[in-house]
Image (cartoon, rainbow, N blue to C red; front, side, top):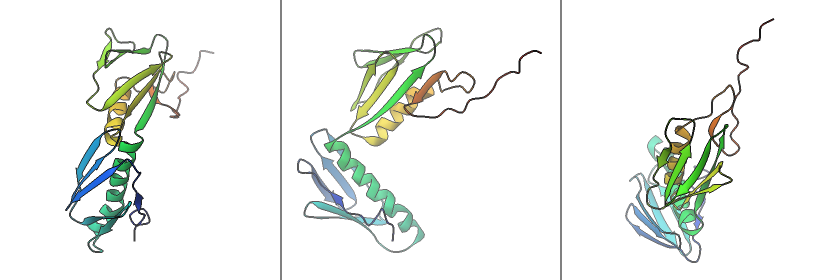
Amino acid sequence: MSRIGKRPITIPSKVTVTINGSHVAVKGPKGELARVLPSAVTVEQEGDTILVKRQDDSRLSRQLHGLSRTLVANMVDGVSQGFQKRLEIQGVGYRAQVQGRNLVLSLGYSHPVQIEPPEGIQLAVENNTNVIVSGFDKELVGNVAAQIRDKRPPEPYKGKGVRYAGEAVRRKAGKAGKK
């Protein structure tokens, strides 16, 4: 039995969960999320907890059991607390700023890079070099953060670029000096 899959999900007081077959909808103070789960798992609500159970012990059911439980738990956490991802910009002249809802990045290109966030995502900037991506959908927050990082990934020689907060960048020595 999956250790993650068999753990119950507690529902906070301000969150409502609607289960209709394999369709799960979660509504809370931050927003509303819905997802169709695979038919290999079933979702049951007992009071203020949700249980995710698998149909049988086939390989596919075992694979989807823990995944489905984590997806539902992330939906419940997202609509009640929300998620955020932090990015750091390192490099001389590299900076970020928010104009309206859009994020404008100066990353050493000949033009500023504009990123328009999808619905449900908020972008904030601290000290011109720290970007905060926040929202209630964990998958969407991670995708937007990855798109921002992808505009200028950290390079191994000087470490310049956009990286996740706390990300370790492996550095290379570069050319050997003349003797």
